[in-house]
Length: 287
Image (cartoon, rainbow, N blue to C red; front, side, top):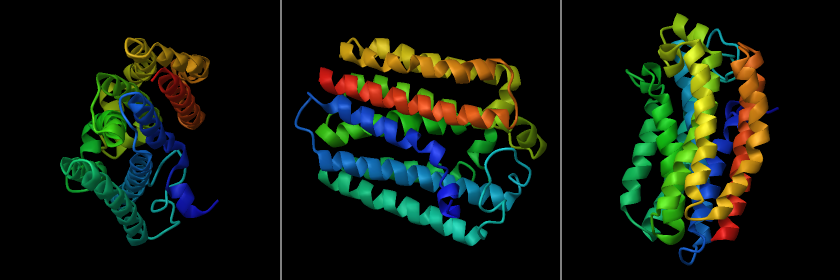
């Protein structure tokens, strides 16, 4: 597989697709949907996710925090690409997100420029800069806000220029599953992160509480479908994804460690994608 595709971390991309799809579906029935702006939102979300992945690869690589790792290979730490090239890839991805976001802002509200700038800055300083907040246990906050609430509510607003209660609730659901991906990643890396002084939330919580936190996030995502059904009963269609949660939850609660958690990361991505597809369909037909 091409090294740059590996570096983009394809397993994390459902976190970029799902909130946009859900946000667009939540917009149906509210008013005429501007589908080209929805498409632009998808470009923003994917480019931002890929940019964050490259930026993390670069920053962790030059710091040496990825020198000893159990998970998938990294471009800088693995010697697959020079740091400068990975940094440029991150900048290009962020630039693509900025251009697509600017088009949406010009067509809707210029306030979105500030939101986009905040998202890009948060993506870079997650592991970049002198005091990366990802090293302080705040990574989940970034993921929940920008790949949950902002991406979902922003997509609804871009589609119909209105923010709805439904989009906020579903943004929280999407954010919970996006956080679950990060929690599994950080659970796997607790030993190596602790060794290099990377104080992720998983390191702060410890192994046992991080496992329970993962389960809580998954349960919360499905629980929020019940809240969403107040507006659209067909949102409950997302519950068809519940069986896909059984495997990863059982594995996590069973104490799987290190390399055994890589499969859980993939399973959580599939759960997130199935949840997103089913919920999107339910919201759309109920709109």
